[in-house]
Length: 196
View 1 (tube, rainbow, N blue to C red):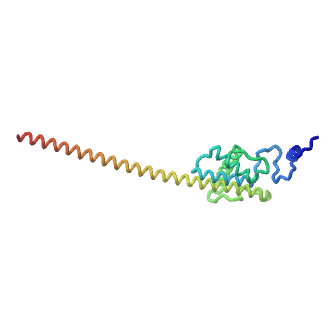
View 2 (view 1 turned 45 degrees about the horizontal axis):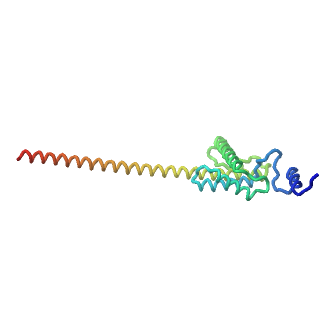
């Protein structure tokens, strides 16, 4: 059996040894720790806001993956596709939780206990709940900013329409005055022609 350092590290990673702080559950190559999820949400939120609430491009997703891997790269590095899929999954979970929560208690805000009702699940569940809540807060801020931008755009559109209508009315009035002057000039010319 070959015992080079390369094969030793390979066998350690396959058997779960090697001292890594996060062991993957069996059969899950895309497993996310709570810390990695929190870092992902933070990196995604910063870029999402920076892009004026637009969709992230592939380069942006690669930057998000790099941010996650730089802090939590001791396991398998995350790809841009895994990061995008994780954010999509968290968004879906958050929307479902909000809908379920609103159906049960329409006037109470969403809290950690709503996301992790069993206290025996411990800190990992609380961490995940906080990460989901943070995603929700970022998402709500983004949506409210988007709504503010839409209101501002509508105000600008109404101002522009008002300005265009004012210019149109001024042009019509100028044309009407020119027409009246022209008619008056023709009448005077016709009247002076009769006098001769």
